[in-house]
Image 1 (tube, helix red, strand yellow):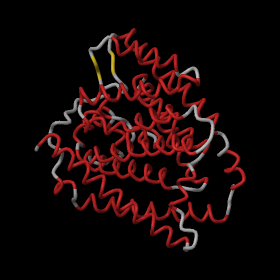
Image 2: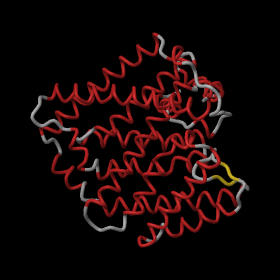
Image 3: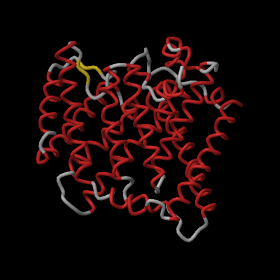
Image 4: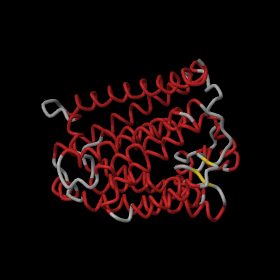
Length: 339
């Protein structure tokens, strides 16, 4: 079993391939925060420190800065990639319904008996082929997301804030210049990052959802117990997502490209359903590699401080993000399902 195959399982979306119940109580916090969890957390801290020390060093020394700046001008190409990817994605949802009789809103587990949904997706997919109709595509994605919340609940749909970002991006994508255009990329990348961070928490709270998949791919465990593997997977996914949200140098582009490649390789392991489900995140990661982060990322740069201080600053944000999302995950579940 190769390291690549193992990585594909770490980032696989288990809800598409296994039985799950979001209403069920998550693993107790006291059981999650055990010695093993602390060891992996400290290891993730070391990895985050090492990356951001390298990232800020590369940024300050201006390594490949001119090349990076030229790539940042590729906004129009980025819009083209995203709208064509959205067209393929939405038309594929309609085609899946035509081929297999199963309709789903935006991801494979969000099934719907409503026959009009695939035809709405087909219409939106055709609209995505034309730049002028992109705002309609954005509104349509919001509508699909809202319908999914109605049927499956807000907590479940927090897995897919990527589609909130995508919908907003398409609404403002026809604006040629200015802050509105840039805000589209900001919201798109933020929504994608939150999706990945939230999915990492799922691996801590509901590791048992993945056990069936792990049993069918025993070589991927690397000799680890399933419980240990899921904790490791959670920290890897959270750490990579945080790095994508915080990197400012070209090093962040490299991480985005590697992450995208892993999602693409997962298609060979999990098939066409995985291809459809992950198509948009693959496209967004490629755009992040192509054009890099937005100028809003500059607020995370402490120009007057040392590289070490910047590293500690990002580590503090990592602590804050982890604690806030962990509390939000358990807190929202308690409020929405157990109160």
